Length: 383
Image (cartoon, rainbow, N blue to C red; front, side):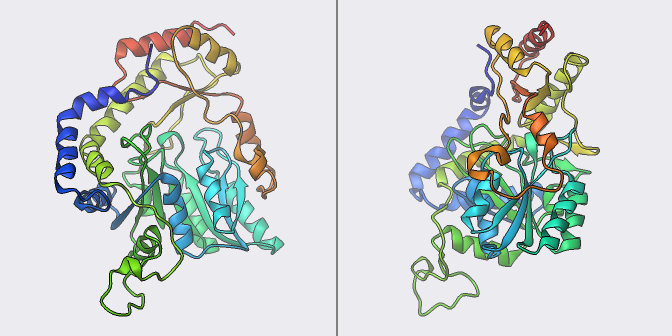
């Protein structure tokens, strides 16, 4: 059976380093917020050129933390795509704010800057909600069009979060999304390009005050720099705000340090897999993935389009080739989100793509002969 994502191959490559990292944590016993957490945060920030990184329990909390730190809440509009995983819009109602769904570009599947601006202007003109922030998604491993999206945000005074759960490590003209975004969130769910052996997440920022406030929020609203501190007490028992419990386990940080050490090489390996797919599937599908100009993708998924997507998926399953659909129903058409506002003109691109997209096996260790089997199976389908 072909693996959709082969985590065992990566583990075999770095198993001695992983075993040693775990042993060090077991030896010192600081299982929560231990020294590896701070070391990993520093290395993560350095990797993408951010001033600070703040780890947390999962990628969903990583999206929520900046919204909470900015006091975004009732009466605020937060703009995001509907063609994404539920975590992206899910965090917005947590704060009391309202998600406004915006359509995507047909080639990259990422947020359409022109549709975004039209949505922001329409919400502002209506006057019921105050435009406050944008969450752009780096879908399938590549960056959104941040120069254009950031320009919209500047014109309208909006905060910008880059949801890089799938795209951490991706660049645009050599720069990571932190160049344009106020905060970049990511996930260390095992299937992500930079994934741990459990859950985890992080927020990257150049804003020291934002980092401090998020640091407070991730530990039950503990007192941090700038908060009143009566006496010489442990700050976690001096609560300056309502927070949450969202800390990255030390064991996960230790594992991720070893994974980060090979991450750049794995991005190159993923590009090689993507290049082989692009050549082998040329002319067979409605489309193979398109990467933004001057962009480097981390290829979290390799998503083709096919007019008979479900038939092709069934054919591939019979051939021992696993597939997945990201995403079969856009968020604005799902019951919990159906009543929230949509940008002008609706979301026709998102709705159309939901019926044609199909993800093929993608990971850095996909052997050429195995990939040839996948390509041949796709090409053999006559539906």
